[in-house]
Image (cartoon, rainbow over all chains, first blue to last red):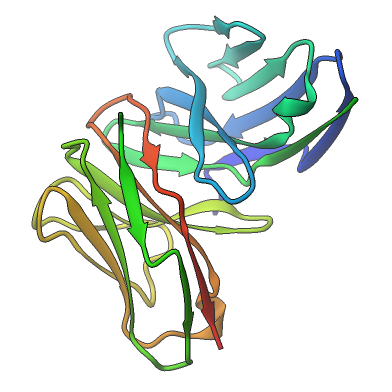
Amino acid sequence: QQQVRQSPQSLTVWEGETAILNCSYENSAFDYFPWYQQFPGEGPALLISILSVSDKKEDGRFTIFFNKREKKLSLHIADSQPGDSATYFCAASGNNNAPRFGAGTKLSVKP
Amino acid sequence: EAAVTQSPRNKVAVTGGKVTLSCNQTNNHNNMYWYRQDTGHGLRLIHYSYGAGSTEKGDIPDGYKASRPSQENFSLILELATPSQTSVYFCASGPPGPYEQYFGPGTRLTVL
């Protein structure tokens, strides 16, 4: 069973728009939530992460919003650029659990 | 700079054959992981390790074995490869706790 779920499976936005990627999880023991960015032919690389003690984390154009009560989080990419076109994975870990990943969201940013 | 390397990068195997995928990390991380990536499933955890000599089953361990002979090396072994194991395999390393994982470039395995 998928412990981490992501939606939508794919998303297309215009350059300059805000892309919103969603993630939810089941295991209450998860307390660390990284988002990874993956380009074709490469391994995933960390983009931004949040601990469950926080409800928001910003890094430039990238912001994570976290709702512990609902076990949901979202990644907002402001002022999307064509170079942001990639697959984004939400992951979760905690309490000595190995990190689990969602199925990913494939983002396309049209110029 | 964190470095995780995988070999081979591409592999074609026959059904029933033995396949060994290798991973090496120079980060001195205790934890290492093997995932497979398939469309619609994302990254699924196969095996992981907390240090030399230890291996743990992930969510989809059937048909796979793992070996961690040293801090730096972590292998994934398919004793009897099947076409359903055709996939892209990623190795990752990371320190214990809430820290990022560092991924290798992946191995594309095709089982005919």
